[in-house]
Image 1 (cartoon, one colour):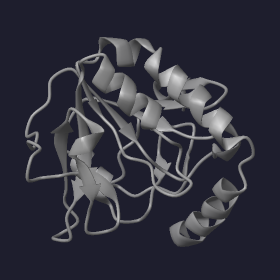
Image 2: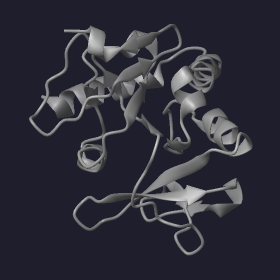
Image 3: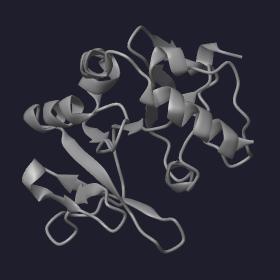
Length: 187
């Protein structure tokens, strides 16, 4: 069922109109949020293909002196680790063709304090559960940490309810191009 939904939402995301404008609205909502302003550490993803671009968030985190971490996914057991970057010059193309921190020069983070994690997905439901890419990287990583999690989603791709498994980790907030959804207020 999830694989069919991934295909459906992948196609819907490719059809988003005014993508650049909506990405900017989403990024501005994140950057201007109390969550972002008060966080000392930002864990973010580097956008691929038709994902919501986080480049403005990345630049803002670096420019405001926050500690910024981006993920590196390993082939062994689906493990994802975050590394601190202070400049886009510290990025390279990784094993899966993803732009990621150069682990030769960037330091791995093993603990976080006052962190905000920005999580990618095809879609989210109002309860904060996500339909990711099926590798389980984020669910495994997030299970070990208790920091605030934000999901980014185009408003027209929000789902009423998604299928979920016992290991699925929900986000605390969903930020779209039209609103911020506090998932603790949803049933």
